[in-house]
Length: 285
Length: 298
Image (cartoon, rainbow over all chains, first blue to last red; front, side, top):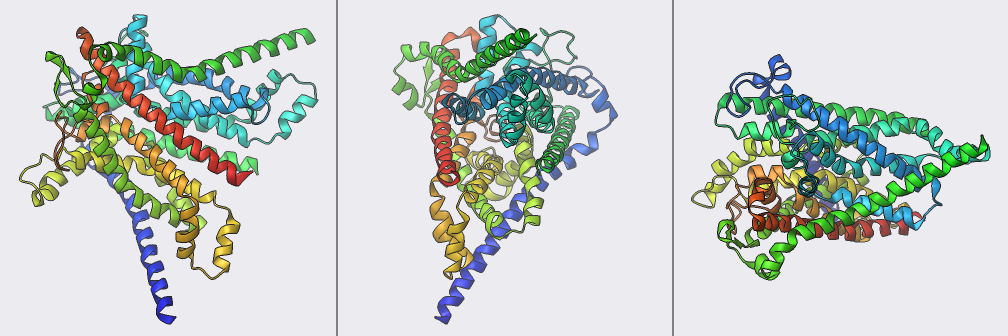
C-alpha cells in the first residue's frame, strides 16, 4: 500500500515537473524569438531606417531605409480595416439583435466565419489575385487592400461577435421598451461596445500588418510611397522577405531592422489589445 | 417623423441582411472560383495522376503534386508531434495546477506568440533552427544537410501552432464540469489521477478537434515554411532532406505564370486542394467544439 502510494506521488511529481518544464519552454521560445530578432536587427536600426526610402533599389541599393514599406503597410491596413469594419459590424449587429436567440441563420453565419478564419492567407492571396485579373486590376494598393480585407474580416467579425454576446441583454431590452427602433438601438449599443470594438480592431491590425502571403501577388512592391490606389505598394513583411534574399549585406541588415520594426508594432498592438479588453471586462462587472 | 424612423429601420435591416448573406456566401464563392480556375488542368489530365505522380516539369507539361502533398503532410505531422505534448502538458498545468496569478503571467506569452507574423518566425528559423540542424543535429545522422529541411519546417511550424493549440485545449479543459473533477478528488484520487482518468478522457473529442484545427493551420502556413524548408520539388526521404510544401509552391510561382495557362491552372489546383482540405478539417473540428460547448453549458 505504502509503496503504491509513493509510486503515485512519484508519478504526479514527475508529470508536474514535465508540465512546468514545457510551460517554461514555451515562454523561453518566445523570448528566444524576440531576442534573436532584436540581437540581429538592433545594430542596423536607426532613424534613417524609419524615415528614408531605399536608395538605389530595395534589392541591391545599400543606402536608405524602409519608409516605403512602413507607410505602405499602414495604407493597406487602414484601407482594409475600413472595409472590414463596414462589413462586419452590420453583420454582427444583425445576427445578435435582429434575429432571435439561437437562430439558425445566425449560427450558420458564425460557422461560416469560423471556417473563413481558418482559410490560409495564401489561398486568399491566390483568390484575390484571380479576382483582380478578372476585374482588370494590376498589383496595387487597391488589390492589397481588398485581399487583406478578406483576411481580416473573419477575425473582426469573430471577435466583435464575442464581445457583443458578452453584453448584457438589459440594455437592448430597455431601449426597445422605450420605443427605440432596432436601428436606433444598435447605434446606442455600438457606443457601449467601443472598448470591445477597439480590441477587435487592434487584433485585426496585427494580423493584417504582418501577413505576407496575401500581399505577395496582390500589392506588388516598390521603392516609393504610392500616391494613388492603382499604384503598387511595398509592405513590411515583404520588405523583410525580399531584402533577406538579397546578396548585399547592407540590404540583409535592412531586412533585420524591418523585422524589429514589425515585431515592435506587433508587441505594441498585442499589449494595447490586452489593456483594452481588461478595461472592458471591468465594465462588465 | 415616425414613418421616417420606421423606414430607416427597415432599410438598415435589409442592408444588414444583404451583407450577412454576402458574407455567408463568400466561402462558397472562393471555393467555386478556385475550382473553375483549376478545372482546365483537371480536364487535361486525370486528377489521380496529378495527385500521385512525382514528376514536376511545368515546361514539359508534367504536373505531379506528390512531392508537394507529401512535404505538406510530413511537415505538418512533425509540427503536431512536437507541439502536442508541450501544449497538452502546459494547458493541463494552467488548468489544474497553476494559480490565477501564474495564469495571468502566462497569458501574454500565448497572445504574443499568436500575434507574431509568419515572416518573423521565418527569419528566426533561418537564423537559429536551420544552422542548428546543419551544424549540430544533422551531422549525427546524415552526411550532409543544408539545414533547410523537413525538420526545420516542422520545428518552426510547431512553435507557430502552439498558441492555437494551447488556447483551444485550455478552453476544452475548462468545459469539463467542475463537479466531475471534485467528485474524483473527493474519492481520494490525486490531482494527476483525476487529470488522467477524468479530464483527459472526458476531453478526448476536444483534444482531437484541437489537433485537427492546428494541423489545418499548419497546412496553410506559407512564408515561414517557404523560408526554412529548402523548396526542392523531390519527395523527402529523411527529416534532413529539403521539402516543398503546397503553399510554398503557390507563393514561389504564382503571379508570374500567367503566360502559361496550364501552369496557372495547376497552381490554382494546389490552392483549391489546400482550400478544400482546410475547410473540411475546420468544419469537422468546429462542429465538434460546438457540440462540446453545448453538452456542458446548457
